[in-house]
Image (cartoon, rainbow, N blue to C red; front, side, top):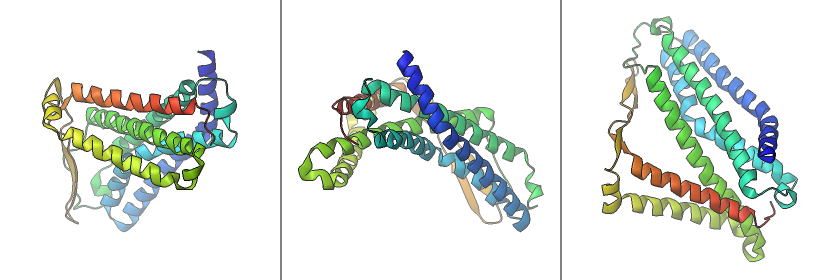
Length: 262
């Protein structure tokens, strides 16, 4: 446990500056869009920028976790560190999740503050309909965090596979092709399973209501931004998805335990 805390602290020290800069960039982009919307009298630019930042949140977690991986790769930590790969990868994943939570909450605060600014401040004929409340933002936060974690685990697995293939000298220079085929194959297989009748029946068990839809209508430019959740989410199939990604993480740990060179 002490070693895990030590690795968490190390990852925090490595990634905190990157997180700070990402938050500054997000705030800076919103502020620039605010000034641009005010100057050009185009309110849609400001409001869409805040939502664009939220939609790009998964990229932040991916960039943070791969930054930590590449940092350790330069020192060959995987070979010389006595800790298990589960502790090494787990500390990076958990730290990245904490960083991602901070970033998502910060982005939500930007959206909330933006929603309090009267649209008439930018242009008189601009309309925003069905604004999200705090609960709506929290649901979006949870959704974006979940998506970020799933993408990060999937790409983490592919990253480990890519470096594990370096042990096979005959295909060392074609690793990118094998990983690309593996990625595409896993996506196709998952979609095929989801579309089976058996999975569809499982998807109707233990349902909970999902987020309701909301919209942003930009009347002057006839442009609409619509966030639609609706329907229900099955706890059973969601649980199966979680198990699948846990297995991917364990597979990545198993490959890393073989002391691959990065």
